[in-house]
Image (cartoon, rainbow, N blue to C red; front, side):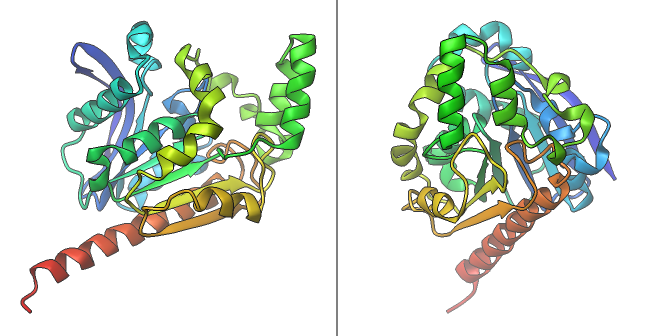
Length: 293
């Protein structure tokens, strides 16, 4: 049995919205952060319940909180007040505290694309040491050669439509027809996001080095915005120098939007398996700490 739905909480006077599906006795909580120009609905795959993280998680005993990131959803009117990364980290953690009744073994942080900027900052903050772990996906350190070429073409033509669609939604066969292009999950992006995206490849190494919890990093086989493949996966994994464990995963058949493609269930099960491992590891560590010597 699960309960939940659309919720709004106020953190320091700023409303924050989320989609929440609670497990009756949660083993843990997955806090999911969507990417750019989308919303929390990204994790609910409209009209495709089999692809929904908000359904898969509770079915396996995990509460899922899909947060509308700062500047999106209910907090969109306050986006000018959220230019500081520290403000956004505090807002997200504050919302989480108000949205949760029970977190089980703890909170696991999961993010896609531009949402990884907030997720890595949250994991690297002082409070981040208490997280179960971190999943980042659809991001990287070096942009795909095809993305660089298409972006230069867009810069000349000043029309990003077809090029951007190809980068973010290719190949079309990877997605249900009704989800290609993202119109059903689209949301205006706050201005700060463009600044953060521009500096992400340079900022990622420093931010990653602050993370002290287990990390799982995923890319789709057909990722076209970031450089894919084993070498790229290993490159980003190597940045998490303080993490006790870093796992990488290439999702076969997936494009950039891993949680909306035909392979979304396979991807979600991969991540939830890692969450389960983190839960078991925390339990073992706690038993060892309290057992008599």
